[in-house]
Length: 238
Image: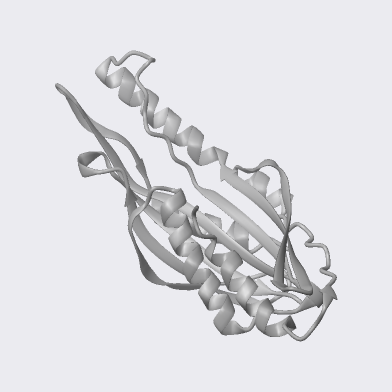
């Protein structure tokens, strides 16, 4: 079974925090964290599906159980997806390829996870750093990104005026000539009763294909421009 590093880290923290407590400890609800609708419309993004709500209960001693509440909201860049589809269609037309030709699609995506812990406990900084580290590994695995490596830190200012660091990573999806660069981001911040973790994926560069006599660039994405737009969108989340 695949180990959930974040759940494990939270369980260890709560074990140390509540080991002398008995019974069931109440956990406040985790309100969903939404991006501003006007920003979504302006940048051509949309929410994917409905809000995912989760409650995970863990027994940390024989007499004590705790639960974590979380909400997950996902977003995708419809405008970029349409741009890629347009470039792929131009490639089909140029080389007279049939409509059945399948292209590897990818677009920018954002996931917002808000977590509440028992009794409104807040995570210490070193614990949050461990969670962010495990989140980067999780992103690499879930999105089939090879060689994901740290590439720097940026800053965004949230609607409430709080300035938070955004950690950036770079890697590749695919292999050989048919690989595409990827920029990944992670940021996190805390309020009085919850912790919010935001991750994002941005395609970057050119996707080339080689199909017998057909060799060319299927589509090109300006990852830096897309990243800047994503950061503006993330700054509206509250």
